[in-house]
Length: 132
Image (cartoon, rainbow, N blue to C red; front, side, top):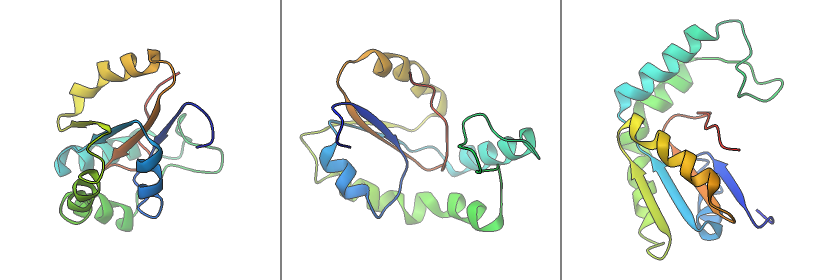
């Protein structure tokens, strides 16, 4: 986070507050539980015994019970805390997407904005966003 521009994807609660303080833009991809469960299941079937192109080396695609339960419970257990944290940053640009397809064009725009410090919070871990 020492660089002038960055985009961080993740909902790691241990560092959430640090990242929120440093960000100028906060994007919360708060999709329905059903949408996320469908997405992780589809991804698991699609990349069964293969390496997903968006995962780092040594991080194979997996779908275990613990991860399934994490995604299933996210909207009830984690999302309220994220919304609470967001109230601490009224001066930051906050964008919340609740419908999966609605965010796709936005990321094309964000990629063209110079000097941005953006945090992306998603209720589906390891979701890939193609931003160059």
